[in-house]
Length: 114
Length: 115
Image (cartoon, rainbow over all chains, first blue to last red):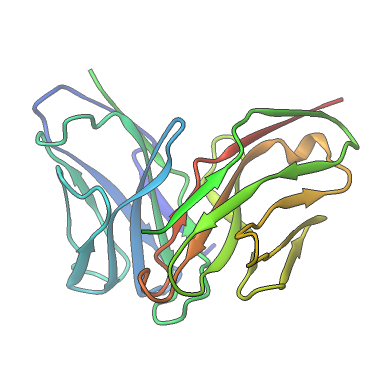
């Protein structure tokens, strides 16, 4: 089945540790996105990539890093510089170059900092 | 900048009741408007969309009309079911500042439908 796979679904980390969230898609989409979801704040864009080997900061990029070495993969690293990393992280993809607005989302990864 | 404002939840309704979830927006240019739905434990999925003023998006009994004069895109359904219980997000994509499919989301409105 075509879709987006995020892993792990739940992740715990200690303060000061970096952690990487995986996002893989087999939809042949050019564009991929990372959003953060917090209660009462909706979704906020962290990073997005319209094409392989290129990515742009979203609204809340500080403390995060990404890479886009393959079309299928867009991993997100939550670094120790992120002051409040406990959140639900959603990865999405879309057809690039056409403003259809339809994003396809994974099921999310819930990160908890202990 | 762009922003989307939704009514706060949770909204609790009895089955077969009429649903309205309000959404208003602020944007430069001429945005496209969307409603996404998030069922428990899942990611978001597109429910409906409208790309220009006076367009009506519809899907699964839900409807929303793009009202430019009131900058609104309210979600409605004539008769809700328990299976409609979810969180609903209003969103906009502004082709001038957003670039492609970059969306701005509202805070989400939780809907609970009871028997």
